[in-house]
Image 1 (tube, rainbow, N blue to C red):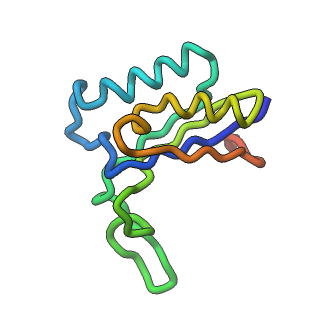
Image 2 (cartoon, rainbow, N blue to C red):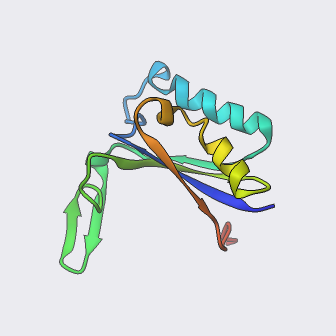
Image 3 (cartoon, one colour):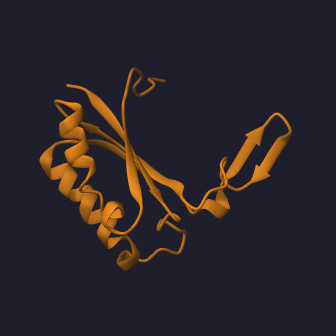
Length: 115
């Protein structure tokens, strides 16, 4: 079955070092719901934008690679039969209702690295 990456775009990540259970209740509930359906394969929440560092030929700069109102706050990998099914699953992300959004990309290749 195909795998899809769902990139979460929002003003900033809620996963700060001092985030409370209350701060994380909505995204954690969404993750549990996807787990229960069997579609969630992996999930990664990023820390806030001020902790990002970007590398270019000119060196390292503070902040995300692209300076924009919204940043990638996290990514998760889902399994779905079709692209339409993946879009339906991704549309349940709480950031969609809170003013952010998600991008869905079919994963071409790759996987976990064995060491």
